[in-house]
Image 1: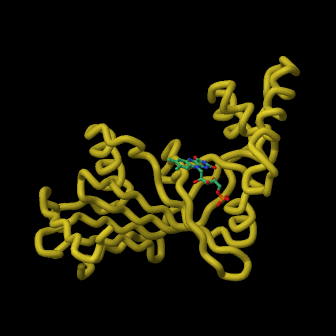
Image 2 (image 1 turned 90 degrees about the vertical axis):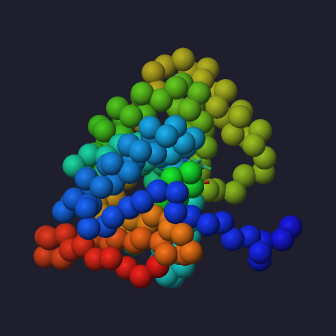
Length: 209
Ligand SMILES: Cc1cc2nc3c(=O)[nH]c(=O)nc-3n(C[C@H](O)[C@H](O)[C@H](O)COP(=O)(O)O)c2cc1C
């Protein structure tokens, strides 16, 4: 595999940072809609990065499930590695890469748990199979084999009762204080536009590629 000579060019699309809304959530919502309209698979998949108590960062993909009052909501296990990180350090970043649109969006901020009732509502809206897996899998804990989890799923399924969201599972909302929009350009002259929240005002800034 040779990667050193791979140099994709960008610039299929134009983006004028001067013709952008004052609020980043408006631009994010347009770009998210574009990604959805383009029918990109997993357009709501985003890299979530967290930092643990030893300042060690880690990243993984999660799915954006809703945007509510500009807060970005995803669901996971609260006792997973990311959950433990967020319990000690609520700073997190999200990253979207929409390859076909030659776009990247970075979003940073503090994360908080969504109320239990909201998590329970979402949990119950998931297919039964997903509910069972969430209940049976102590996410990020070492296991001997996946059979262990499969057996636990079967045992929970045999209870034949409506499943409730366990307190160890639920949503987080990221409250953004920084956005950065990247549109690929010809000859590496990409367009970058950041929005930083300063004293409750969004400050826009173009950045060198
Ligand atoms: C496309 C894709 C979507 C995913 N969505 C989620 C998700 O919404 N929530 C989640 O907890 N894990 C999701 N995962 C699994 C995570 O990437 C990760 O393996 C898991 O959350 C454990 O991470 P942790 O050990 O860092 O806590 C997804 C993985 C992929 C590849």
